[in-house]
Length: 247
Image 1 (tube, rainbow, N blue to C red):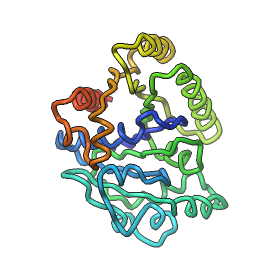
Image 2: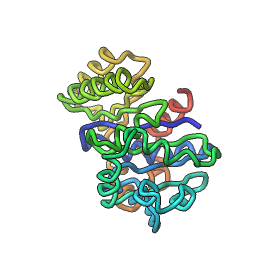
Image 3: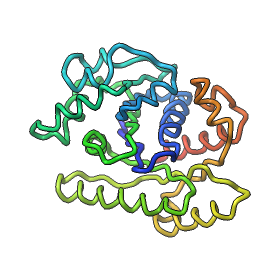
Image 4: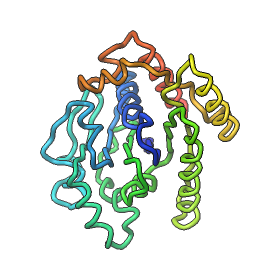
């Protein structure tokens, strides 16, 4: 099972949209996928339109087993949702020994019947975000086409370096996903060039173009593949799905 964190310290970079689109894209390709929402805002579950009485809070506080917390979202696609109670769980584990690997231990009993597990991280350097990174084998970073985007990316690389040095966990940024790419705007092309120069062309995916259908799909609690399968957004996320399958 490939464990992948979708993360960026900066909000508004289509992190959750990228997570649910990739998860659904892979499930449509016949892969078994589990999404774990590590964000107290609970956007991943909301985006799928999933409600479930047991959340990541119940798993981390040992009130429920991992199987009890899993909700069905789509064919081949399950999710462990979150909400604001996750903040309480995070506070509870902050005093535990080995608190950085608490999430990983909580998922130990997860049946290995998934091909991919995605952690949808909060846009901050929270304890549970660190937990998600330490439970991951790969990291995908959506970056929107703003001039200070590279600065935020460098901050994450600094934190990853600390994790590798202090906690002896091998983790690298496997893929950069440029989001909100406007083909009519020279700013987008300049920032994309900066990303390629900094990370290397082999780690930068084809951009996700600005497309109103993507934001509309979230409102209707559908993925872009359901809401507008003919759109540029669906085309771009389909390409990204194939790229992730090659990681």
